[in-house]
Image (cartoon, rainbow, N blue to C red; front, side, top):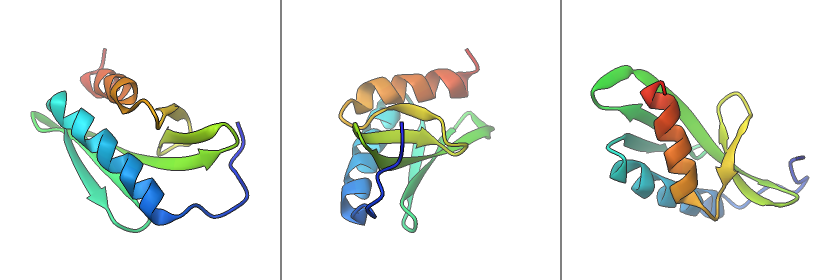
Length: 93
């Protein structure tokens, strides 16, 4: 997948990240939105050392959540599935 060449509108990115944050909280994780560039800092409150940053980017197939190292987590239209994947990684399973 390739990034779309046009710069995304920040409110769209923030909208998708807020949806993901709600889903992550349902999994017992803490998600803090950093404003610029918009990204979530996700951690397990019981294991603070396990934390990761997730952003949201437009690609030719739509908007996607992405790990800090650039690997896609999942489609932004399915924040529940992305939250499950993130929770599994932070749980070390």
